[in-house]
Length: 506
Image (cartoon, rainbow, N blue to C red; front, side):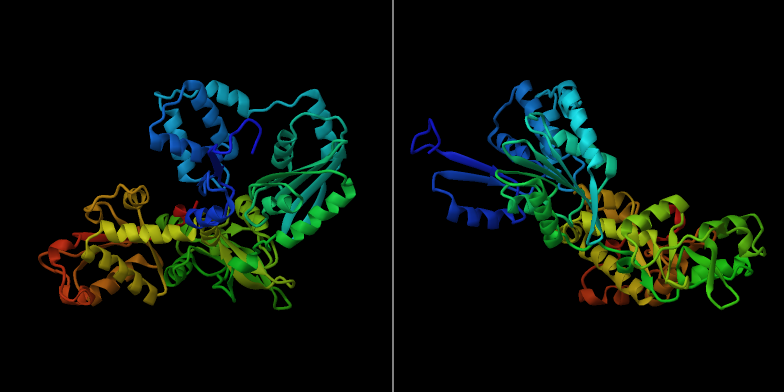
């Protein structure tokens, strides 16, 4: 037993360094921990969050000083709630501490979170900057920097944060020989490199994003080689443009076609823009620019629809290659403000296209656990009546048949995610954005299920009236899969369909 404790002392182990589900971890821990040990665990960004949750559960009050210390723990462990590992539980625990009843001293929090470097740290930081070595591993940028600093006794984590912010690598490793041991401080900015596993293999541990290890009797070069070897083992290949792009020759515009022709083409295929391309003397593609629905709308509104596309396109030769990284793609999109980037081969011929929507979907998938969609789906079923839920499912089926995509937008989505949506939500302000032609889709639904459609061609929107006295929907066809359940009164009065436009993504 630890010094000063009795054999019957109860222990509490608080741990959030786990990828296991809480139930599975508890089961495994019971096999390893002595019977007297109690385990508090959970997938939170901060270990302190687990402690705060227990304080809330047991109704234990805290002083202002204690609340400030606990808040510091959450802020520090989650990077001020910005790390990818941050969860809603961390925010909820912090909100409880920030309540005036607890009274966190934010001036002290701010003072402790911003670590100024002293002269000794500044001198060491300059050497670390000079010694930075950048490696390309599985498409990731990895920096390893080493230094001999016997007798150095200050914080190295502050220097790691400065280097990470300066270079913005995917992973960073500080290897410092302190004389009696070598200290490794590791940071990661991507889920594809788990520095916790690297540190664990070196005898240390930590998060997937922040970890450390201490090695005795080792040499700097040996440790550096171990780190590179371990990163190559544990790093997952970074995604490239090839993983996101739509392959094949995309629809392209001739620079001399009229704006009206280009607008009709964009509406027909349901895209927000196309590359403008001509061919050179050898028959190879020559990218001139991109023309979007936004430019088309503006030109047509000003009576310039008969003008050539080349006069109002966004000129440029912005493109990416299949092997380019997602970082490269993002920078090209930001620098050019193009929402559609052609993908070219070594000869410059266009072999695909990647869009801003593709990038947004990637971020969404990376930031949400798989269970999130299931939770929202279940919440949707619980919130809506069977007829309303069936109606949304039916729209999903019909929109897929037209090779479109549909999204519910607006306050309804916000309230659903916050779990404050009312059972009358679908009768309120609900818009359904169609990636395609919203008017054509509304007409399709009217032909198949009745009702009446009110169109606004200029804005690409349509209102499908479901309960109009003069043109009610064909209830039997609309609700066929519900086996007679449901009535007209269960339907919303109307649904609004909106064509997805460029401004939704910019």
